[in-house]
Image (cartoon, rainbow, N blue to C red):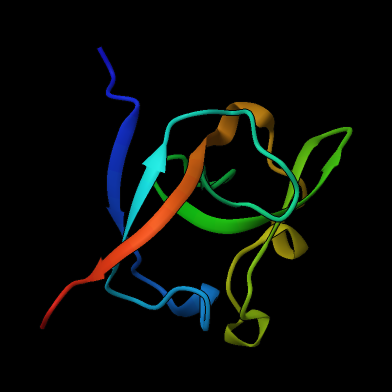
Length: 101
């Protein structure tokens, strides 16, 4: 059985200023998302890698996922295209803390 809620830690600065490295997220496992929501998805080329991105728009190929901080040169749909719906793992419910060094 997979739990419907999962906790993840932000590792990269791709979502600054919305999220920062070390932030903890509570994620609801679902593929029912809307444009504008923060989502967790598997990287299309590296399925073991999880991404936190903003759902931009629904396309014929899936979801267009965008970084809030594109200046970081990070991976998002501008680099790899739309992400299939099957790669969506869930939506971020809220950020609830920051990992202390």
